[in-house]
Length: 331
Image (cartoon, rainbow, N blue to C red; front, side, top):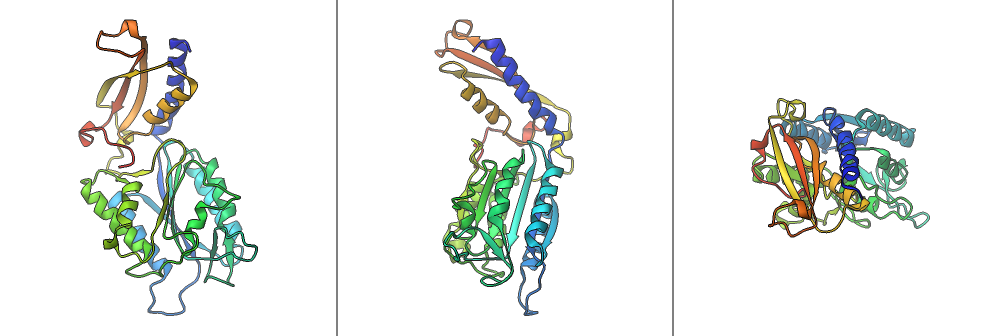
C-alpha cells in the first residue's frame, strides 16, 4: 500500500476517534426486579444495588441509574430501557456498565439452558436475557456486564446468541452453578471489595477487569463458587475502569505531545492498519488526540533501524504526569 495513502487512511480513522473524545460518557445501569423480599430483615437485591451505586459514585464519580424490572411486560420494558440508554451514550469512547442482581432460571424446559432472569427462580415470572444481549453489539462503545445471579455463565455459552465483540462479562458463577443471595458473602460484595483493593494497589489510577477477576478467584475473597470472565473480542483486551477527576480530563486542552517512532517488519496491510488504529485509540483516557505524521521506508531511517518501515506517531496528552509509564491495557 502506498505510504501517503496509508497515512491518510489511518489519520481519517484517528480523526473519527478524536471527534468522539469530547463526548465520552460512562454510565452505570443497576438492574433488579421490582419486587420486595418477603422477609423484612433480609437484604434485598435492591439493597445491594444501592451499595453498588454508592461505590461507583464515591470511587469513580460515574453517573448511576437504577431500573426496576416490572413483573408484567418485563422483556419489553428492559429491552426498551437498554436501547434508550445505548442511544444516549452512542460513541466509540463511551462505556455502559450493567449490573444485574437477581435470580436466574434453569431454563431446562427445552434443554437449551439459555440466559434467563426470573423474579424468584423456577416457575416465577421471567425474561429472556439471551434475546437482549445480542443487541448490545450494535453499540459503538463498550459494555461491561456484571451478572450476580444463578446460572450467570449462560450469558457466555448460549449457542444461539454469542457474546458481541464489544461486550465483556464478569459473572458470579458458571452456566450450571448457583450463587449466594445478597449478603456479606455475595458476589456483588466481593466484586466491590476486589475493585477497591485493586484501585488501592494501582494508587487510584485505574482498574482492569482481568485483575479484578484474578482477585475474585482467590480464596481470601470468600466466594463459594468460582466466578467466570469473558473479555472483549475486538482486539482491545479488557475494559479498564478509571476514576473521573473533578475536571473531566478529555475536555481539557492538550498540554504535552509525544513523538513516538515505531519500527515494523513487513508492509502496511489492511489488517495491520486496523490493529494499529485499535491500539492507538484504546489507551489511557488522558490521550485526547493521535496523529500519524509520516511513514518512512528503511532507506530513510537511521542505520540503527533494521526494519523495513518506520511510523512516527504523535499523541496529545492532557495530564501525562498521571501516566509515568506505558501500562498494559488489561493490567
